[in-house]
Image (cartoon, rainbow, N blue to C red; front, side):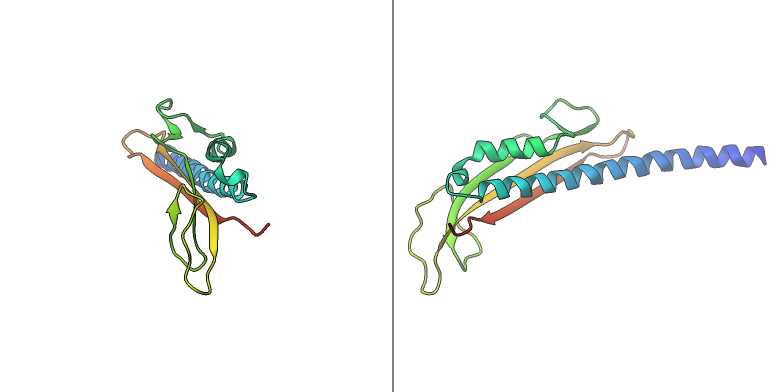
Length: 149
């Protein structure tokens, strides 16, 4: 009976630690996704913030306090090189994609109009606590159109 309880404790401890680590990765992933959405909302709020890519990037970092700067983490999450990013542009109202980093769009087909947008992309590398488990790439992306004035 004693041996069985010790054996079960030794088997369930790694499982419990793995579940905690997986939960932590899921939490940080949700945090990154929400931070990208919040930053895109900030950028799409008016024509002044539309071009404030530095402000959008700062908003992503502010909303993701559990993600460390690039290269400064041995376990946990840190920003991937070059991320987060923010771009703005314009597209026709019925288009799937637009021209990036410009506010001067050409003409649109009949029945469509020019719409400004922002796109925020965040990506972080997550290194688990448990050795031997590969790193994960956590991503978040949001694209929003500038609303009417």
